[in-house]
Amino acid sequence: MFNKILIANRGEIAIRIAQACQEMGIKTVTVYSESDREALHVSAGDESYALGGETPLESYLNIDKLVQAATETNAQAIHPGYGFLSERADFAQKCWDNGIVFIGPHPEAIRRMGDKIEAKKLAKSLGVPTVPGFESNDSDPDLLKTKASEIGYPILIKAAAGGGGKGMRVVNSDDELLPALDSATREAKNAFGDGRVFIEKYVNSPRHIEFQILGDNEGNLIHLFERECTIQRRYQKIIEETPSPALSPDLRNKMGEAAVRLAKSVNYNSAGTVEFIFDDEEKKFYFLEVNTRLQVEHPITEIVVGVDLVQWMIRIAAGETLTLRQQDLRQRGHAIECRICAENPENLDFRPSIGKIAKYELKPKIGVRCDSGVETGSVVSINFDPMLAKLIVSAQTRQESIHKMKWALANFVILGVDTNIEFIVDILSHNKFVEGKLSTHFIKDYLNGWKPSKYREGAPKEVLIAQALYELLNPRSEFGARLSSLKSSASQALASPWKLLERWGRSNLEITSGIVGLSKDIEGNVKNAKPPLAKKPPEKSG
Image (tube, rainbow, N blue to C red):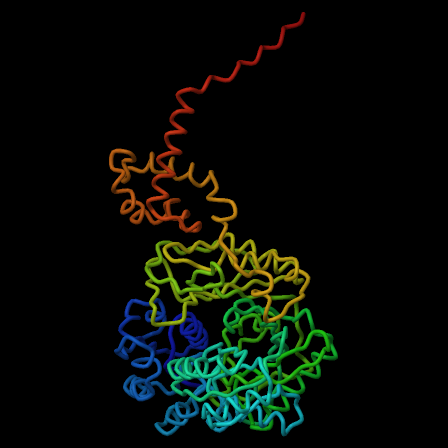
């Protein structure tokens, strides 16, 4: 077993990997960019290493810097987490060439399956159904335009070297193709260091279902059942669950067998995910892609199946034999994961929200887990993905999991930046979601033009009353006499209900006006109030 592992990532996944290593008695090295110097993940390891640079390209995507960091800190292995370089065969090869174990599949498996184009060709050769498309390393715009016309619009542009919705665009006509191709190529290059893209037919109203796979170096390979990842915004998942409410036992077996067949064809030797598009009406599935890495949503599988995927990745990389057997694995209960992001979902715009987190708190409860990379005082930067945390719940049934998740979200306080918490609650509360009638178009179909509650009901009066009373009692506020200093005073009092009003998106000026007016109403009501009529004492008898 390794003595020390370098974690080539940031945020919650770096913390998750560090925890797994510490439970196994393995020391860890965390790395950070200049903009992440004060980030929570930096202190999660036993030691840390400065990569320098502000952007991902200058730090977490810089292969030479990461290999140098591992060499200088005497780390025997590198865990890439997800995103960044996790699906780059050249990174895995560079690690091995420098005597460093890459905790993930061998470079050839990444090349064949991590490359979306090669993976689709392989799936076809194995008889696994695939979505019609044009898979080629030739990204010539004129050629793709011709092929798009042959396939028929709408088509989907996809990045060849990665997933997570990066480098994906829906195109409805020839006029839209070239601009979409240009922007998708740029985004893919920035996210994965590889700008290659390909096209495929856009399937209307599908479900997105993936199977978790795990293999060792001796040919043992299993699947750990499915995850339903259909609820997405901008082709990125925000709610995942397992088991899928759409699969029968027979379909589950067929899709799991297809996933294992694909993985065995390249001697896959780590954790990975085989993704499918599922036609809910015809009950047919089509191979989509393979993610040759750990997935963001891996915790719900861990909970339902009872397997620590991160630790098994490490054990397999260290040469241990997989002792799990397919016939022994079971799905127990139901788990849901919600991705909590610093963004504004209003009108489905999802603009990233940056700044300092003034308050971060989650009440503990049995069956609630939170994998997070931030805390009170953390700064959310524009340089990285806006995901702040993964909130995970588990219960015996799907309905119980939904109720528990709504409870957990109601008790999750993140102030100082906009979040999608209220938006997720509205998804979970929608009758179509409760019934399990899902498609990747769910948000567009049922929450189009979504607005936060401030536009539907206004800020609850109880919140304004609480704020008025708080300011009257807060010695740092001196309400009325120092009205102009309320903004700075409230920002210093991190637990102040003042911050709760940011949930309704009001400006500080509007908040101040509302509090002043309400305080006057309270004062007037107190002065004019009449004492309650005294109850007539009961007459004595006898």
